[in-house]
Image (cartoon, rainbow, N blue to C red; front, side, top):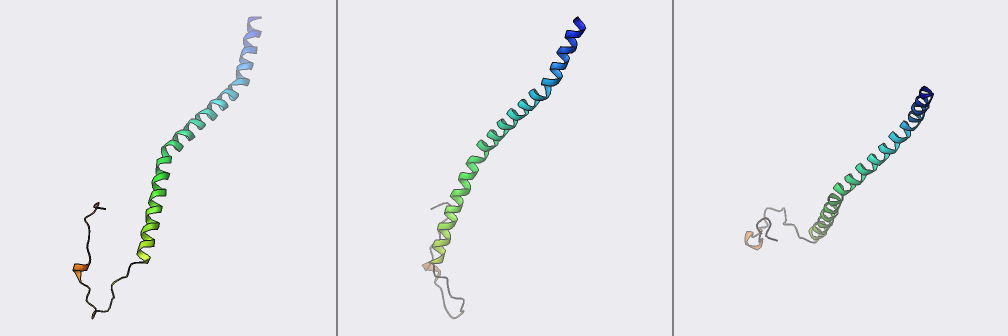
Length: 88
């Protein structure tokens, strides 16, 4: 009788084990996905901000007159004011 109950217990365990492992694997996978999304979200914001700035700079550069490449034209260096990096 004890051996029969033990065999039934092992049969039930062997049937449930794959289900339990599958559920645990799925939960772990979900936790990893949530963690990675939380980790990557600030990077998405940075990329979005960088694209915005790049678009603004590109728009500004379309309206800037470039100096002539003709060597007879003198471009005064005093007319160009350059700010140090980070001074904006």
